[in-house]
Length: 245
Image 1 (tube, rainbow, N blue to C red):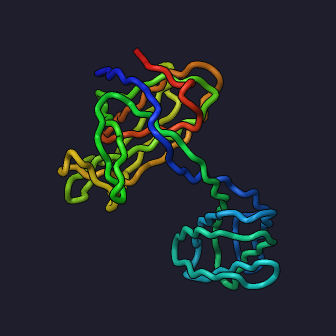
Image 2: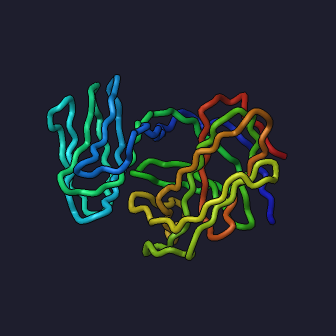
Image 3: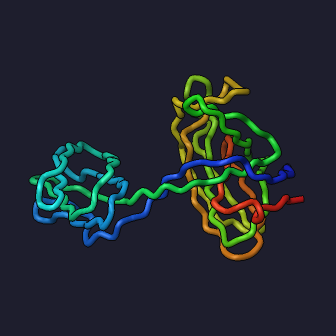
């Protein structure tokens, strides 16, 4: 395996990340005789994941006893709302839905500028520096915990938007021990392109959040299958970052 030495420095401010915090619901199945209730003590941004387990049907959102919004769902739906303080009830007349509801909390992140094999991703006409990773080339850095790292992974597609690999498999190591592994197929991003290589298109970002406990962590990120690029963010300041030699 080819080792790449990366020197860490703090990239300029800042990237907004919407963290999903799951609401504790008494039930997650919405039926005609089984409504879903939750209460907000203050205005919040909310995301609702809906999966229809039956035929196409409507569900309704009531706020303080009055109908507020309604949605028709055929299979799956993702709904983002800014909801005010109040008591909410979700109802359906003939549907059979499975639901997860999350509070969206905005977090400002600082990106790590890794010196190695940079490639520029242009996302909605803004430039972001990512770093190439393969089976033979991994990114590595040291960081002091406790810390939360946010890892953004994109796989390679060809210039026509077709998958270059049957599957992507990511591996993350901490002090040579595997702490995370994930397979994903990926979906080409129509809003993103590489500046330097027009024969490759990146996938939509796979977003991974990892909690690191107290201590020194030597992190390595690589693909076991496929090729792509990575970008890493943290919330804390520069004093927690070190070079790995």
